[in-house]
Length: 500
Image (tube, rainbow, N blue to C red; front, side, top):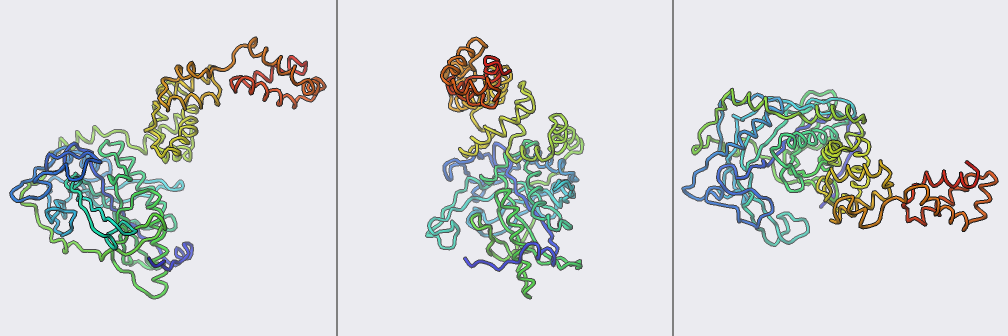
């Protein structure tokens, strides 16, 4: 792969203004596919969740999935879209091995939802991203290119196709061109995808696992010279599958296109591939226009005409939207926007909220989920919310610390035991003998022995060198295997040596 010539980002933004567009595909979490009854379970053995309809066999007829239509309308309402009073499906014709019937049932000029917006916040500034359309279609199969170094068809020895994914309900959310983002363009693209993902989760319509492909973003970027009002030629970077990669892909395309334009070249309208290892994009294929797909109305499906009363019923049943919820929780928990964003990025908002509901203080809930538990999640590569510990268990650990049964060091060991399947927090405390050495009498006996073992240090403290008490506190903690209250140990040491 030839390394492209890039223009430094600041220089590129000094000469050109970026225009963004994001096309997001979201697999809906329905039990069955869009036009047949096949299961949609992720990770099933290849080609075990297929039937004549999703394989496009002759004589098979599709039937629209009502749950998918309902979910799409909810998405449109949450994105402030108008809902079509009448629309229909269309056939999108193209010939790739991952589409078994050589056409995709989609929507073209009559989308189910249209003309909406989503507000996102970047560096304290609210950016309104216009939504052109939200339409419903079926997903394609998945090609696996075997052999070669890149995992792509070029250089592969052979290819395999798994049609389990073919026919899964897929919602495509297309933004209007986003202008005026200037140097924040990469951050705006990432913030939009982040907010959209949280919105899908809040609606309960998809698990939006980007690593599994249930949410995939195509990033459109074009540049126009400063002072010009004419948009440049856009490129479309396909199937970018992480939030960080979205930001990197936008930045790279700005730097790449700027270098070409500054050198007198032209931008080719094409699809491009993003490479996670290098952060670069490479050419895919020339970008088709709508006429290349030869759209025409799907003859085997009736039009969709959502009843207005039903639409309003769905609107009334929408959950609290993520942006509204975050503002409420920030106020209730007393945290900054930066802290809330960190929790959002870590997937900790729901666990923290549930831990508070189980009795922990907001500070304690944040402390354990964003500290020890986030560390363990990162080490194991496990999503935070999927760790083998419940919010109620975390709340109990926080309570044991608050009541003086545990200190932070012991609490971390208790969480370790819970994660290892050793039982509830109290059971781990009992089985491992992790309870703090309690009571002045018990702790005093340990301190007496430590003083006797360290007469020189004790004399320093008696003479007024109070800082030397730290050495004796350390000895107490060692003698109790970290199970003493260090603060109370220091107080007792000073009392016993007449330095209090």
